[in-house]
Image (cartoon, rainbow, N blue to C red; front, side, top):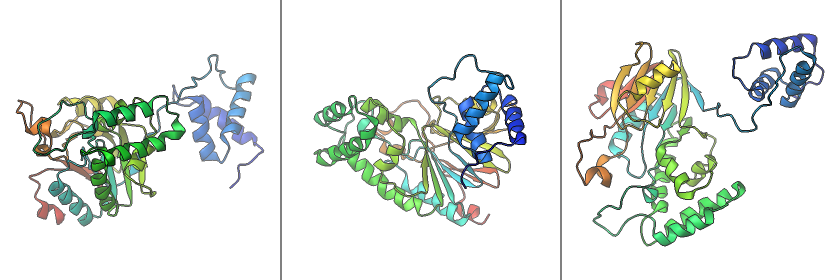
Length: 348
């Protein structure tokens, strides 16, 4: 339906009222976008009317103009039942545990998947020190890395697709396993997984951040999907390390935060007044925030610790990585782990 041209007095009065009563701190551009969508108006038309109201004193005028920089307030939002898959870290995933979780999703008819960050490990771009190996396999070569960095310098955003092709090409030509090998494993697995769901949300994690650090350039998150050859409409991604899941029992924030302390999930739940399902820590914990009102869950991980040289080849006193995932069903979070009674759960 085409946007209407004429404004009625009722519309203008409602626009003035809603603009004046908007939540403090809401940017005018964001208000105009949402109002236009809800009322079948163009954003430019809404903005024009608000500017006219400001100049005539109908609404408070903006003495200082709005910042030209983007506002990061549109993370992914989904609704209903979903499975949260934390830190899969292809190609170092634990296939046995992942398959059990996916099988339970089918039995429970879960049709939404949320990958809670670190979908890809990017070992070839890792900042970890070199590790001993039983084969000649390793990361990307120094020569290949220099080609990559030279290409990335001053790269305009419209050529980011060429950058992705170069990454894959470097991996294929290298005598060692590199980015390309990791991506091939991820592509095959993600194609199989997406066939089980109607929608898949890709939350960014710190391992995806390795790509940004390696390239030293900005990157459209859509390029991550292109990197793993995802081309269908089931997948969504946004430049955020979190997403939202709205349920009958309130909103869940699916988090891949900076911190990984034992109290991080509880602190986030208390800060944002919503349930939290947290990845990144590789820890397993089911508790509530300080008020006892919101779930604060550390969801574990789906990576195989024995495939990670930094964790498996040299002992530390740090806690073990714990396998885990969460299915939110009818608003209640079911924390899954390696001691889950799968057959019993399948009957629920």
